Length: 363
Image (tube, rainbow, N blue to C red; front, side, top):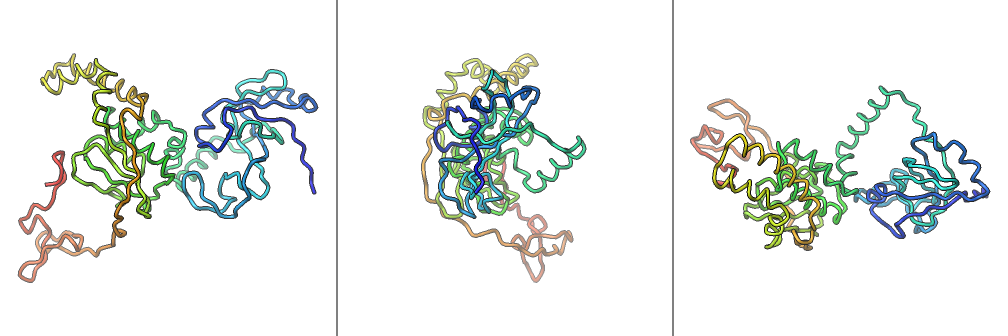
């Protein structure tokens, strides 16, 4: 049997199982034992290092397991510590070296974890190959960066990206990002657009865009359900019906106004009093950006209530045939066809309005 010596140990703030995304955001230290300290010569010339360590407290291995994000995979397709070899590896950023101590960021190892080896990071690809590799990764997992930011709790990054579909920054979007991030962390699921993760929103305002972006549950992939209740609340559930509902607390808005009085004053002038002067509009937009990101720093438990709920899960959305309207000749989903006097019409050609979702809800 091969015997691999320990060359050092980890000093970390984490002593037990923790969200790996959060762990990689923190700084930690690696202390190399005196017998191996000379091997650190010129390691400070490397910006990034590969750290190999022993999962000395890991539970017995499983050949198939759930990842932290809730995906079910073979052990060799995951970073789970429950491995046959109990060998772990991570790429870290080297922040500095002091004698036999390396200060690093990105190490997802617990305190006192034995270190086995250290190597400078080597990526045998040029810039064009790296770009092609990144494209391939995104093809295989289009939500990879979003999911990474969720587990790391980077709501500021998520808010930046959510604004790309929302069009601007506001407190509603920020609240949706906060609610959806917390729910995703609690339920430990991920959306692949196949209706195995469902989001149920109770309002169609700014909050819902934050929920759609973070959860990946949208109208287009049939994983977003809209209940026209007019409440700032949403539920996230897997198909087992065990959901998590997050709603705003009655005093939440007052807590936000107290935290950002300048924006509340500007909101009254522009929205309530309809002062649309260039000066007030400019001030309103700037304060809106500041308040949106400041909202992310507020105490979550003073804004929201989190509860476990049982959810009635709808069947998977069926696939419907398309039928030609006898008047306009356009293809129409079979369930939306209106039949009269032996002919088939789309909703507008039949002189009907159908159901319409506007800012006022469904009408």
